[in-house]
Length: 249
Ligand code: NI
Image 1 (cartoon, protein in one colour):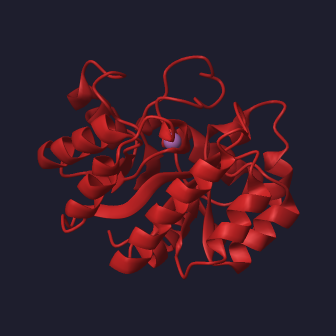
Image 2 (spheres, rainbow, N blue to C red; image 1 turned 180 degrees about the vertical axis):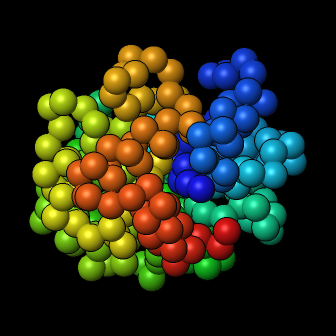
């Protein structure tokens, strides 16, 4: 069985959540880590955990919300970390794709949340887009474990993150025809990667363009098995061991 280590399962994206959870189970995906990214989704993650026992949660403020989050949203996160199904701080990070003008605010928001993770001994789920250098420099200041979600960088960047103790989160991007990620992952040992969908985004080929869901982990897994010459059972075993090293699930 596989785990979707990064998804955004919220009602605004999925009308029938029971069906999504069942589809996952029917496709060998028996666990998922639902990532909050702002005040509303953090609250929803906590609600959904009560309903679905295959779901674990991460709480965080995504860099896209840097202009709109309130101090009380950070307090809310701190106040809900005692829940034993909240297993990480995420999705947090840096994103300079749309604007570099709020770089300093983004870094500050990231550091506040990394400090919370360190204090509570929780792993972090890191989003980094067009911000590799700053992400590495900031993560180096903290004693943390975690995952570089949606990793799509170079082999050299992968090596840096791995040496820092981070896993690489691999999703449908690896199946995209123009992606250079498969050449990088060919050279990376399986012990350094975990699988994720980033649902509802980044749907793997041949379903690209449709809404993604955790069941698609199986498509990503099959692609990686082909690439690395391993069986599904072997890939499931290794990635589940990797998950256990980082997350308390
Ligand atoms: Ni995400």
